[in-house]
Length: 98
Image (cartoon, rainbow, N blue to C red; front, side, top):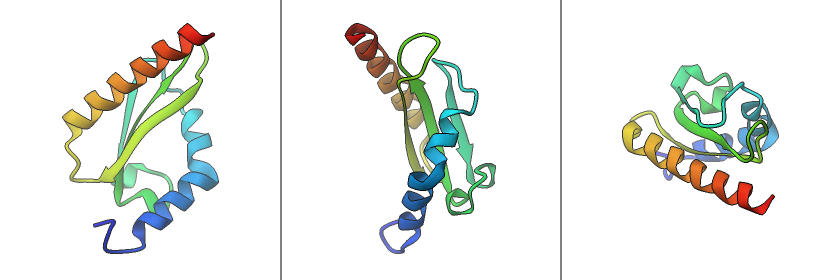
């Protein structure tokens, strides 16, 4: 549904303006994965989407945030597993660098 409208443009604009900074401050623990579906998203352009994200980095501090955005009909099990795995891999990478 994103390819047939300008909906995805609004989603990207919202993320670039404020959402990514505020998502990072949401109290998410290092190995936690957060799922927000539809109306659970506080920003109107994201209310037709699902967000799955996690923090990664060194213990006690986040080096970054990684996740996926998709329609609310997303394959949640697969997406959550993928985000968790990639977050752990990036976390290991960052810990080895620092």
